[in-house]
Image 1 (cartoon, rainbow, N blue to C red):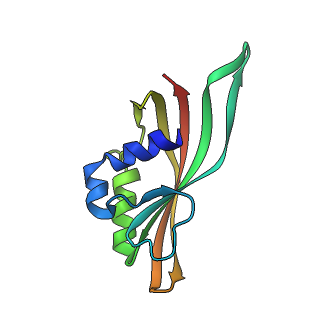
Image 2: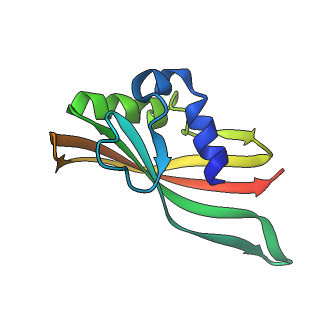
Length: 133
């Protein structure tokens, strides 16, 4: 799921026009540049149904949209999650042999600092269902 979701985001022209290839899982390295998208798997596990294990796994993914200005972070988040046009708002696609189904649960904004100054962050909580195709 991790590489399929990242590949989907990196294949979205409107997003890469803003962040380039700075879409990664986990922490950003020092001097990695902004704007950027950071992905974290918060929770997840295989699903069960009455007849046993399901082919689907459900994960909660936190997506941090980072920019030097509030507008930069918000614009990235809008491309990802603004209903009904955000690419992760109700996405149902197969990417690299992985079936992905997503919906947005929450969105919030805050700020942080790095060596260069203020970093604005808009965080999106997404539920990602995935299964091998």
